[in-house]
Length: 609
Image 1 (cartoon, rainbow, N blue to C red):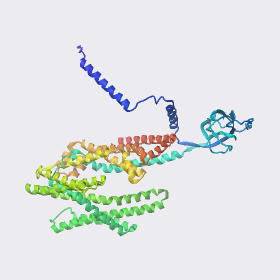
Image 2 (image 1 turned 90 degrees about the vertical axis):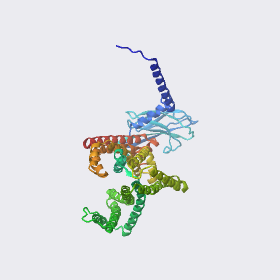
Image 3 (image 1 turned 45 degrees about the vertical axis):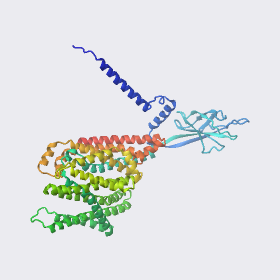
């Protein structure tokens, strides 16, 4: 066996590292103000014991209580004449004060007899000569033994008077069977609100996170490349399409309103609009072309497609009006089930609000896609010098539009009030950037636009995910007011950015074999995702979604602290009021719900995943 001698330098290194670790922890103790002296403080220990005892007695059940109130006279100070103590009726509950008089600050002994066994209640000083006076002083409590007797001490307050004053014992005993407290009912209402708050946030967040996850997946986006001509025309198509789509759909919405809000008209509109849309699209987009369509026929088809799409949006507005009308009638006619009518009304309101936005996005995406294909075709068919000339115009214009819009966003947020800095300056910088891009790239070179979109999407997701749901709840409370709706919006947004990241990372980890096989068949982007990506990601997507619901249940108890609804709002109120027994009931409810949710999600993951 070879015994190697230890190196002195290694020993020095170990010593230096140990010393550095000690210094770091020493500084950490100072920064975090670690001080066990406070823990040993008698006052702190008394407060801790009091709070722990309150938390150990959650306010869930209570009894009806009967009170036994007994007053006994006392003099503060002692009268100059002989003190006469009235006789007590020993067949009923009675009190004896020893001594029966004293100076302010003296401690007297109070003995109680014939009360109900094992009862508690306050022992107070009643100033004044009226024994029924509701004003009481003191903090002492009395607790009877198995025989209904007690002995307690009471300090006479600084309330001297020549008249007789009183000491009152109010002992309460339980009557009947236990029943749920008002705190228990309030906790039940809020914990149900918490569960559904988390459910809605998870569902809405999941639906929006799924499409974002494909854009934020590097393996899907890195192969997306386009020539500069196509990119520039696509960029220009987005704002133009959004403006056109929003204006057109708003006009359709006004037309829908002018038609009327009668239920019968709404029903006819809901049925007729999709039918007209289906007939129009079927004629304008035939599956088989027997004869090459003429230019006029193509223009006619485009017009029919536009009218058909607008008819579809008209059907959405009619559906929104019908849902709101039906919801209002159901709210008044269903009684305790009126929440069904409330649901229909709110769904109709949501459809009416998001339809213009959907129209704007659909028009923006469609026009961007059409112009992008035109740019792609032009880049492939035209000569390189001509393409470069077109790129100089299009890229310069696209850069000016993008940077100009960003400048207007800055103006909206910061109210600078100087167009030179928020409009013309950014537009010039954007135009120069587009010009430089044209000069330093080949005319027909395919640029990695997919990685650019991927980087922008991941950056936005990371920025939003870094903001806690608690902060988001504060913003949404300002937007929609205090209540669970603000909590749904805050948790929904946080769910979108969190699940989009988890989903995208799962997409990035899929097997490349099926992806390459589908792409080799000439499938487009959508077909590749449907047949190669989705079959591999369904199980982990379900698992992540269930886990997120579990997280949202726990997070919803926290956002209630800032007015985001749920049981957290009630918990904060009771903590602020030092009502620890009620707070204990809410903490137990949270623990029970989280445990149940964890069990349910684990069972579902085991069966589904």
